[in-house]
Image (spheres, rainbow, N blue to C red):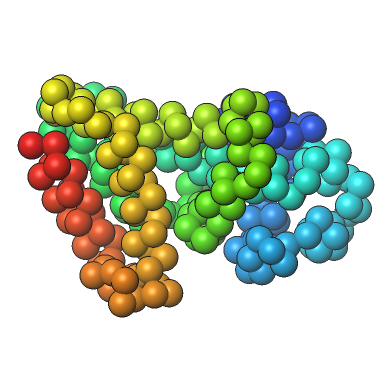
Length: 224
């Protein structure tokens, strides 16, 4: 089975972590540590101890932990768009294409055997908990000019295109697309941590299915 790698903005890193064993080790264990500790308590010093290396070696790949977090989240969005593209590629019916795209957004994420150094389940938990920290910053405009949010915008555009295929006259496809992506993230967070804010009750066996029902109803009733 071929090993997947994704091309992300060179402005995210000093050296591409996908290009070396150490870089992939940094990605693998940063996901584990951020998932375990949270982004606030995560440091390069702790990561260096985890991988039995030095902080200096990590700085040779990432300028700071903010850039590392954006890299991880960008990787997640790129991987998710890849999965949607793969599933809808040979589907002609626009309604079915949109439903497949929404289902891929809502489904429970599982380990991808093509990418050994990334725990996609943990990475989704990081996305749910930490995504806003990538752009709710004073430097958001500068980061945007450097192309650091291209994968998220690309995925939003992909869902907007699927919406337009079903309803060409709908006026707000990109607004709806970005709203849906944030809603999915927030509903998963609320279901687990603030359950009174959601009708999606956290249950590993069915909360993703119920989330999809909510998203499908919202999208199709809105665009029609």
